[in-house]
Length: 105
Image 1: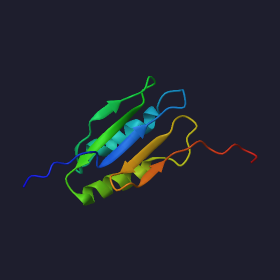
Image 2: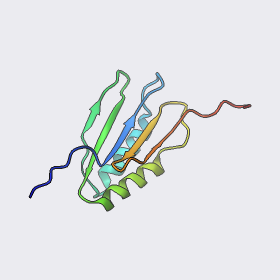
Image 3: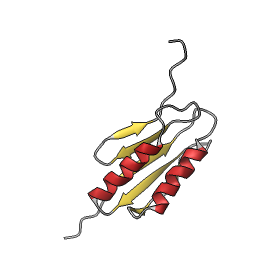
């Protein structure tokens, strides 16, 4: 029996607060994915007018999925004034940067 996989093992979404995506972070994520051996493919879907896009990373094993997810989580800062970036594991875990709290509060 052949089992066909539907969906992404790891999804990375690059958003924008109206100033475009964080190109530096996107380049680091792409380099991490391209330089490793865990990703089998990573098609990109563009969906915004300011460079917003999502990577759909496909892997061959659960261990590879976990390594990619954990590695990308480590790249995403907790706060970003430029653009939100989120990584989602196929099992539902997510990690995202968010707007920093306003100072003085």
